[in-house]
Image 1 (spheres, rainbow, N blue to C red):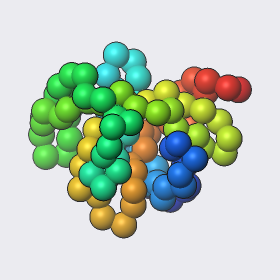
Image 2: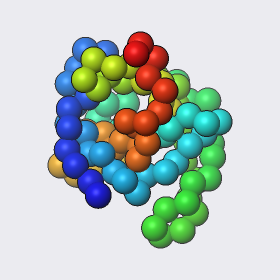
Image 3: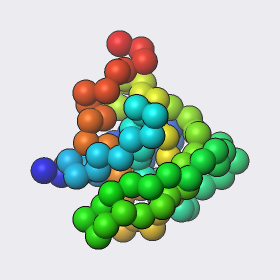
Image 4: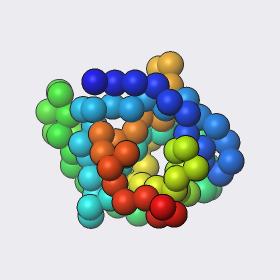
Length: 103
């Protein structure tokens, strides 16, 4: 089940897709997919990992970046960059259930 919501990264509002199929983690931290148009020096590459997708296993590059905010709650995530149509960011399926940093 997918739905649209707004998130903030560095006080910038982004249109997000909550993707119940995105179960990608790296070291127990969810991976979110951000459109390439937002790639800048705020995101620092630190490793490559393999994730399982509908189409099979693929290697992705993982970046450290700013925390994200949803309804004024702060979340630590890792980023991968992708070409995304109609949205700015694809959220992890557990984004509402992961440990909120300021709750």
